[in-house]
Image: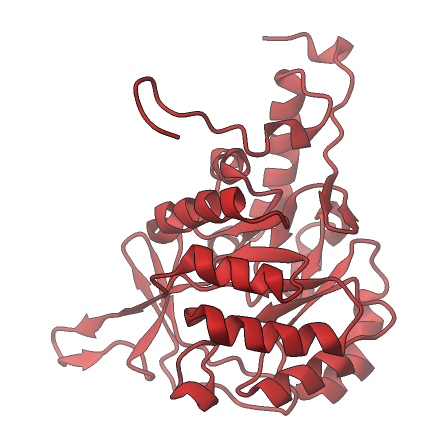
Length: 314
């Protein structure tokens, strides 16, 4: 163990395109709100990623919307939103009181709606826009934009033309072409790739023989999907030149380190916050302590340092 008293502090900052974050820990969209300010200083985080907004107010899916599962949770919230007006008039002024960069997550059902909303949230105080292209596209029979490279490129091209802010594409694990989709998003102008959203799943109550979600199917999150998200992060980071932000089942310091070693420049924490509201603050402190103990001068030194097993292939 190194003498931490005589070890220079490690620079925990990470670069995501043109945006500099104080550290690589941020929330996943949909799992973060101003209520967490009651339990820790939100400016500890590298960035603030807001719950996905849609242009018009909407109530979301029928209840029940969440069910616990072994290894995680299943949700079909349905992106309830108070609309662009509430975001502009209420949410944006509130978050202006913090110094951490504000990342606004947006979603829409059509490319026209996506582009219009992207333009409308391009406002002073917004540091970047995270395009949740993992949502259903009604122009493609409900399949998510990010299911296929062609629809990914089409919607990202429209979004890129609608804003001059940094643009992040949130991808889905529900595709057989993750690398091709990621390359399409990059080619269309994505400044970073968030890998990945929830995996589509289902649960049935054997007593009632009914689905445990009002929407029948929903998104699986939590530790059970971490190996899938980690594999995607590794594949996409190797194939793409834009930064990758890892997301999926991150709850511990070592989880965050795994994603960064696989190639992620930062990570998002979601389901773990529901189980422990202070988990992100703890991860920031634990990651900093680990980096100091390792004698690192910059946390970026670990990014993409995964090595092949002896006798194996990279």
